[in-house]
Length: 383
Ligand SMILES: Cc1ncc(COP(=O)(O)O)c(C=O)c1O
Image (tube, protein in one colour):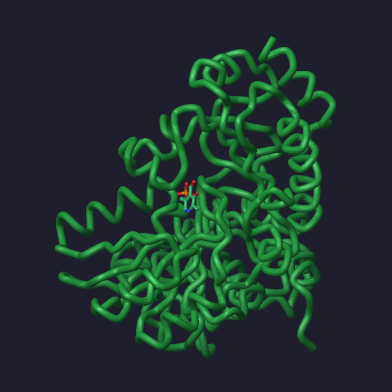
């Protein structure tokens, strides 16, 4: 029987190898480098933790199931899953088409591939379909990559439409699902070939670990990511896997609460005279609000706010007491940051302006606190 995502997340240990023998609700952490080949005679043989480890396999089996894929590799950071995607799908002189509104670390990695391996990176606005079509027709694109929602611009990309376009042009399509997570959207079911994500954020949910994962749609692609993960040493250590499993069963309730709290704060901010614009896909004012509701079950509690001046934005960040000035998102504690200075500092001012981000844009990650306390903190910060 095919189960809903939250049912699988609540029975995570069932995805562990040998789970049937113990019925344990948590799974042993195999903190080992090697396994004795002489002691094993099953279908699956473990030899070295860099290639396979039963603890990591539990999480890989779970992610494969909930994303609707054929195989997964859990990586030691989220950006390692992006690097693994590039190592698997690109070669020297490849072409890649990327949504220009992307995480700063992905942008930095693309620049490295451009400079060192002569990979041509075509940045585009994935809402401008005709322009994407033109790039795909005129260039030998190997890989199409986007986030949805995008970080930091919170754009919603029509994943089904982009998947069809990539397929027509024989390109692989990968979606960075870090913001929405598999509880809200499963890109492979919408036509993508890879879904990758940082588990540092909502999935682990407690800010205690950095990690990531990549899930492939087909057996063939799953074998490829596994091969390159072993070759490049991208895989995650078992202790970190354990930390992630502690957060996973509550993902659904946390996502719902992050969304609920963030809507209240975003609506409050929309009414303030020191604010120029609030960009949150849950608000009706967001240009892709309808698509956001169709494509995602829960909309993440991450949004951007343009203050009327840079000084106001800086004063606000300086004075907040509950909100920390922190990069990353998806933790129980609320955070603010100026993307131009922190998470997206690898972009030039012009590149950020092209995706609608300026020095007065503040990114909010709303946590699980009481919203009245958060609003009071905002009020005192702008006094
Ligand atoms: C969309 C997106 N993808 C990937 C990453 C990288 O994840 P990590 O920080 O776990 O390496 C981030 C980090 O902020 C992100 O926002």
